Image 1 (cartoon, rainbow, N blue to C red):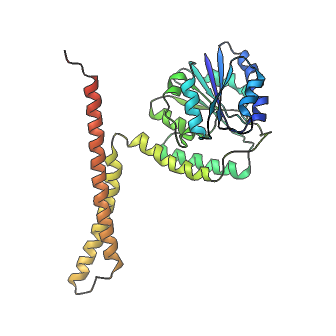
Image 2 (cartoon, rainbow, N blue to C red):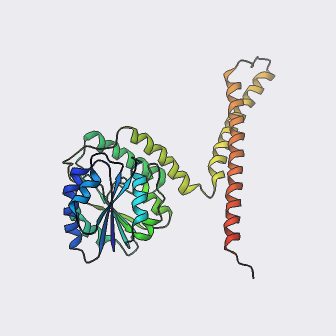
Image 3 (cartoon, rainbow, N blue to C red):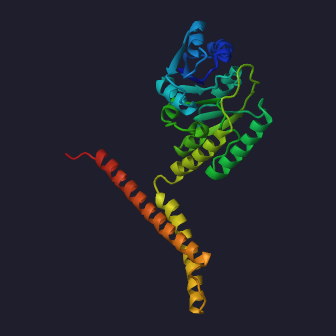
Length: 303
């Protein structure tokens, strides 16, 4: 069975055109299907428009208020039952005709197929900021990809229902999948121009995305070894602070006054913060160790 999830926020006109087109394509695929439209607190009658179409296999889930794309996807993914899950944007820019090609790519070690928008029908600024975002994500996470934030994705049901999405983490689904050991790939697809409405993402999304990139980096590489991060930063600060204090000590021994030297204050600050970072890393390691012991104890049965 194929489950299609479309998060929608004020996309009534786009969905009126997209849903019949999508159902027509799914009818050609040799599999049962369901289409879940997650109305993310829309105020334009999105839910009523979906119901008025009366399409078989299409249903609408509604959030009481606008909670963001990650929250909407999380609700939709939890409600899916298909062995294959498809994610699509509700703005009509993802072409349903590409779906059979993407479904064919799934399998044989590939658990996630992302529709790469090689030719994007978006504004100049949006296209070029996305390039910078994708390059930064590749460099920081080490995961290869050209279009991490594409909303057009096909994945196994196991992967889809194992995702924990919040904040802006929907942008990093391929990274989270690789971290969990799944195989991912990209497939160039057609990206259509938006014909109704406007983009719901402003400039603030880039700052949120960057902060969540740091979150993803931490979750995927330092969850089980937090001291490597905090301790590493702390040691660098301690060495820097210690070097400055040693310099100031040598200066003092030569008879020069150092009481108002900025280097002295900076050295003390770096040393104190370095000790705090090392302590934080050790406490985090203790928490991880206790959690791991609790997990092991819970899995051991004693006769």
